Image (cartoon, rainbow, N blue to C red):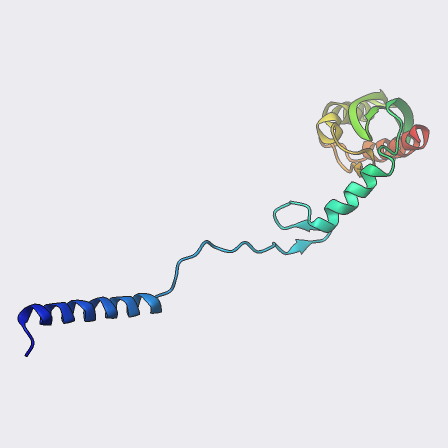
Length: 164
């Protein structure tokens, strides 16, 4: 014969057993796993963080020689063709560890229109190139001036040759 107290204990144990079984079947909560983001061209992860392959190659470059160009200030003139004919723009770059630390543009206008566009170019170029690696420079349009950039890019190539 079972007493009411024993019945309560059996029911209590049975209830705990069912709760334990149900808990074991429930999905567990764990910390989310981190997956490596897919890489894009250039060995960069989608977040902009270099992947291990990109990191190791950049480390190899840094340890095998450092800068490609000598630090200093270099100048050259570049030419380009405008609707008014051949134009020239003077470029002075200061390099430190292959990066542009300063830029100065000397305008050589042949007419008022060229003076306007070269002046706009001179006023906006620093914001686009200071702090960037000289090998990454390829300016196409600055402050509304697109033709002056051809002369600028030509002058940069000459400066790179001088700075080696």
